[in-house]
Image (tube, rainbow, N blue to C red; front, side, top):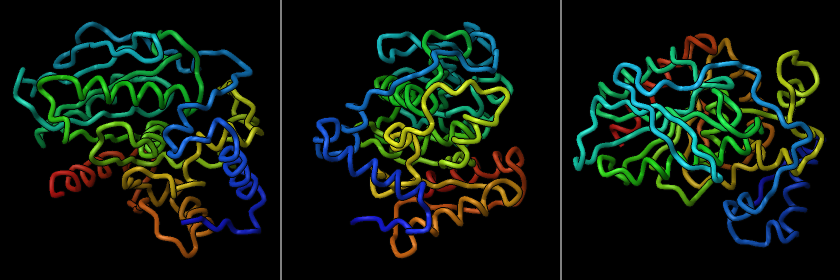
Length: 295
């Protein structure tokens, strides 16, 4: 089903046009969005690390053990919560995609919520952060890394491959939404607390933010097409739910969604929660756990 873009939104129309043009090129000659995404090569105009100078992961931290997974030829670290791990006994799991531009160990506290529900949690880090090799790419290389982390987890003998989930917060929510477009990973359910990014926010990051050194040309609609799934939700490979606080960007995201999809049902669900960007994280995780346990 084709999505009708509101004619009043020039930026949205241009991004939709970029998608149509990509569909007419060898990059997008393949049938699935996943194949088109894999064939696309981003062009970085600046090769930089993320601005958040967070330290490398320690070998162990409480119940967390550092593991390494391979992504695009690089070994990247992640923290695995080992408290529920029993070799050979398969259990459900979640790949938790951290907020911000690096994994802050304070965020590991959310593992308690998953552990209480019997879910093993993996906390990956991405290229260009936490002392890792590679560069900051904004929802491109990081999504490739997240995909690789899911595939690594699926290979472990203590994981139920048919019961792997993805949840992200903030920037991690944007990565989770991008992962929900890919049909070649064993993910049962996908969710996020915040993390719906649009052209307005990307432009602000690139032109107004004093901290972010933006790595690609934000005016390039082909680059944005493969980073901002809100504009082509017809490509979702699985349902994705995003919870956003009433004091966060809920109203803006709801207005954009209604503008883009006035007469179309998609596999994207937007849910409002009371509170701010930070306050809604725990509530969103609890709602997500209820969703995947009851499913």
